[in-house]
Length: 414
Image (tube, rainbow, N blue to C red):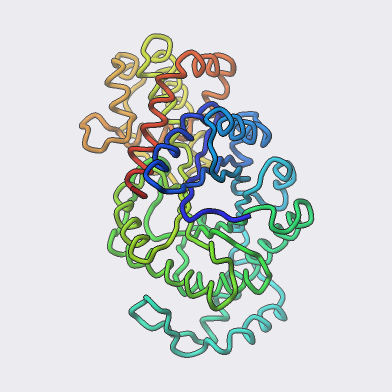
């Protein structure tokens, strides 16, 4: 089972927007591309909205059947580990192995020495084609990398071996995620992380490192664009080198997590991918959930009332809702409008404040991030919320499709 060159993770909190998401991808593919949709949902999201992995599989299969989509598509068990993987085994064929919590954990000294011995040929000045500056590889550096990442790659191996036993070798896509940590991995660190995975026979097809800068949920990238460009291109070159050196799958490519709405880095990514003829997996996280709220507000009437209710409840519970996402949001509470103010907004004012169009003077990034983490509020509305999604399906679907196509696929791949 192989993932295509271009793929997009279309997260959908409530499993109502599969057709709208797929319409956007099919529209992009009309230009001759072959973008693979990957419906993804994490264990945490399932817990919060009281869904299960079967719901994601059904959403994907139903959308594909109804729209007569003929391309490859996948269902991702997003950010799983050994403790959470079992419920996903039957429904998923793409597994994001989240090993970030094992970074820095100690491992057996024998394993470290074995790794160091296997790296002797790379000691000294290492030239990676496409990277201008030679990389200096010392034993001390390799020892530090081993102590930092060997346990994490061992965990990836254990999850992979479990999945191989359950699903059969070659019957699923393997992604390794190390993005939810404080410090970014350097390109040189990633090179030897990939060697560790290859040594453990983990056929990783996408890898999600922690990049320099902030990848806050649902809003634009914050950081030094020149530094990101240099790091991203070096990561691409390292992957190319690792595939040839270590025998990893030819399909191996970068995965950008919390990649939705990172408009300032999309041109950088696009230029580098085209320059080197490489692929990308982009995870769009909760941007579809935000479009549902935007669609409800745009619908007016009971839809607008529900959107305002979601904001009011999230405003009153912001500490609780933000806590699990503290490392990937940056909300200025002074920029959050009072509930009474929002209750007086028109449909257009609410839409303009939430919709990610930075040039719009009403756009409010803090409000957008708060709503992003507030999907549990909608989940608690139960049938009231799902009935509204069905009632206003057309206008919400238009918002979802336009967002994925115009703001994401078109900017990245077309």
